Amino acid sequence: MMKRRTLLSALAAASAAAALPSRAQSNPKIVFGYTAVSDFASVFVAAEEGYFKKRNLDVELKFIPLNSTIPAALQSDSLQIGGPTPSVFLQAVDGGLDLVLVAGGGLTSKTITGFGLVARAGSGIKNPQDCVGKKIGVPGLGAFLHVTFRAWLKESGVDYRKVNFVEASFPQHADLLRGGSVDAVVSADPFMSRITESGAGYVASYYSTFLPENNQTIVHAAKREWVAKNPAAARAFRESLVEAAGFMQQPKNDARVRAAIGKYIKLPPEVLAKIQISPPGATVNEKQLGYWVGLMKDQDMLKTSIDVAKLIAK
Image 1 (cartoon, rainbow, N blue to C red):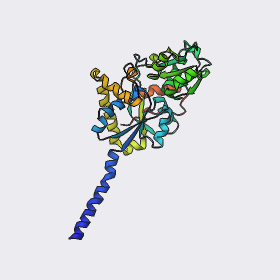
Image 2: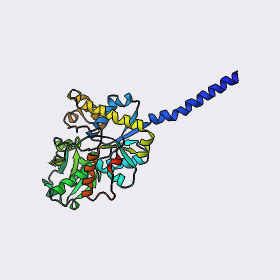
Image 3: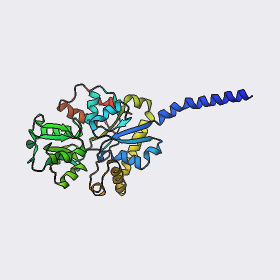
Image 4: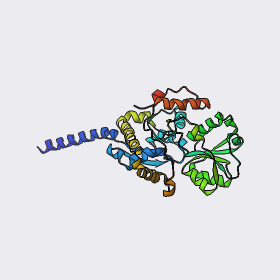
């Protein structure tokens, strides 16, 4: 009898152990990589308002200094999901990484003046033509601000190849301007506001207002292999952001949204109160991604033909 009970106990333990991988696949630990911009607000809100926990997701938010390094972090499994800009994502795919999109972040809007060209005090930069021959810092070569700024220069009749672009993370922008290492930076709030308030620079152009409405500024990517193994977790992540987007769109929740942003990108209250928050776009469609493909082809940034329909996880 004792042997029978021992055998039954062993079988029960084995059955429980066998079930563990299935539960692990449904709710894996997700390390999510973000950069210091408010376009990640829906992720911050989902974390702070409990929308991830509501769906039994264990999500750890990890700050990444340069957006352009996120695809490599995904490939190495340092991150399970990360927020590259659309151009960084598409370049990674073009380069052979098998990534897909599980959700979206912020959206472009002509009402947003939270990023632009910030020139060094005394530089004399006032218009697109003044950028020729100048050294301009961007927070990620090939990332959103770099690509859109080059598109603006081209639309203004300026050959962007005559501008010297250097990679510089957002926190470096003020010091680089003050030290004269660069003539201007393509920056975003809260860093842009801090630069202008300190007198280190001035906004030469809110060039972002030329962009069409409702295109993704940030996309949330993962390895295709990870999504295939964890489809429920990928959907739950997206559903969490959809719920967060709904929360953000209610004016009564503005203070809580700003508090969530401030927690993760370390903003003081006076700066937090002033920043503009991009509209949330929790889902990505083929038209939005196709816009970026067209923009990048126009700048000779893509070597392969990209089928956007295959890049959006269902």
